[in-house]
Image 1: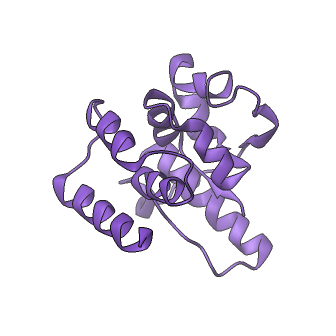
Image 2 (image 1 turned 120 degrees about the vertical axis):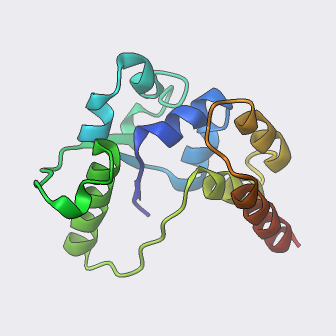
Length: 149
């Protein structure tokens, strides 16, 4: 499975100490260069440590040409690059089964596999400046409960 991620969710994964679970869950992660290089070095720190610690070979920075397309104007550079990287990879692989999830979905899936504690991870995430609405959290909790049975 190829996972494409913008740097923001990865940085939050580092902040709440769930980053190693990402590699246990997915293996290699592709980070679009536009999102990677637009961030200050502190936002790229996951490549060095702790996310990247021992996993440098599993992080691939991919360059993508971002067209001047008004349909993409509402997305920031990292999101545009992630979307285009995903679309380019899907076409090359002939893939039609694309699954999109956010950090909460990653936390849910890692917890379901026993890689981390779901409630502790959400509590840590709420202690950051991550924008987490009560409605989205409720959906993630319901999905976790239903699938954990």
